[in-house]
Length: 233
Image 1 (cartoon, one colour):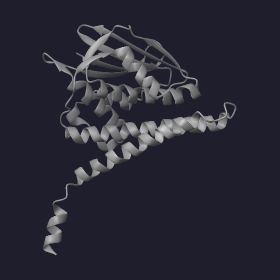
Image 2 (cartoon, rainbow, N blue to C red):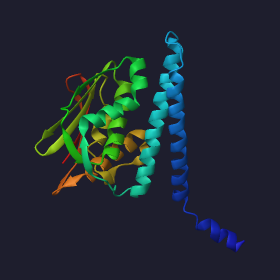
Image 3 (cartoon, helix red, strand yellow):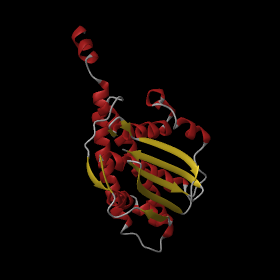
Image 4 (cartoon, rainbow, N blue to C red):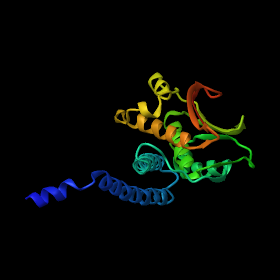
């Protein structure tokens, strides 16, 4: 009895959970691919079926983003996020993100307005920034109406990347939470807390000469809805 009790107490549940999340993420990725393949076989005139498939694809993609966030936070031990920095052409990165969400965008008739110079490049962790921006675009697709604007430029030594939509904008509670420091975040408050925490974690992990990345949430912009901006030194 004592030996069994000792064996149970030495199990690191967080490691087991991380392994399970990793397995679920891989299975979900295969499911997303299957949904995309299925969408190509549907009758173009069957609008109801195409809408249902697009909605399932959207939810699966959103869930996959959550799993990636959880796994990354485990690996970072909720304290820091190791990054791999390399030169990245920003417009290519955005086009990759858009491609992963093309099924839902096309079905919902969402128009994209991209204002990024072809030769704009920056040194950053492209995989982490992909996750960050993808999550913002997923939210913009959900709460926006018909158009999403994505722009990027170099401003005072920072890459300023913005995503705007024409939806109702961020609620006050989310705008207020976006100003919290990482140490003050309460991840138990649901997906909003996790998403903002992860976005801040990714942004602040990028640093140069005592300057750190940051995020800013606001309402208005050119489209009148939510405006998300990430700045990377």
